[in-house]
Length: 180
Image (cartoon, rainbow, N blue to C red; front, side):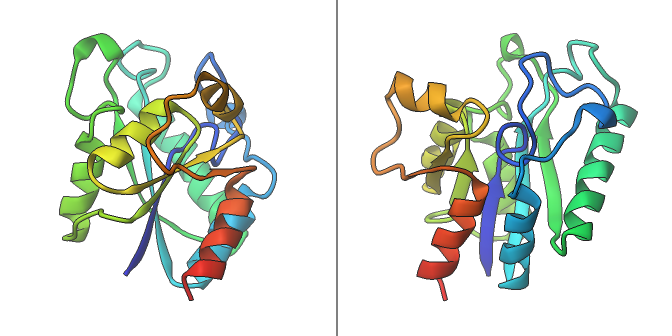
């Protein structure tokens, strides 16, 4: 099974430092939906792992998060793709939970759900915490320059051998070229 793990904000949709608090604020990054569709057509199972501390901060409620994800699922489907599942951490950083990236809890949930280790599984993010969480479980961290990606790259300290891509479209192109 070809599996890929994507962060949401800054990878699939436009990042906001003020959180995505409504379906209206969720806007796909140009080319991201098409990239997911290409991966889906080639047999990849696409899942999302996302920190959503806006829930615990009271910026939005569970119903709103569900509506945002419904919009994302529909937009991906209209492009011909599929996001199989969304794994999210609802906690703020100060909660020190096991599921908030850079900790590996979301990745461990994905491994349990799919009954497999994540060694070598591509995991695409725009922040260091996305990449660290992936590396912790042996997944293959990949940085995109969208969202916070440029700042993350400039700050340095990426896990060893982390490839850098312009956007999710370039990630898809790379994966489809190397994994036939």
